[in-house]
Image (cartoon, rainbow, N blue to C red; front, side):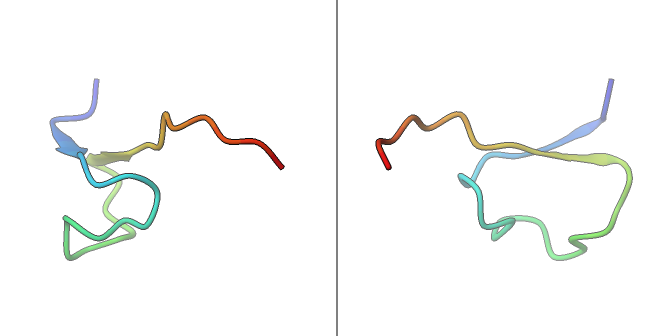
Length: 33
């Protein structure tokens, strides 16, 4: 389990270090294309 969760959808905007392996970046939005 990752100890840090970036809660801002998709853009990796919340956590400064976007390459940190301890951060879980996720986007659970659904959209139509």
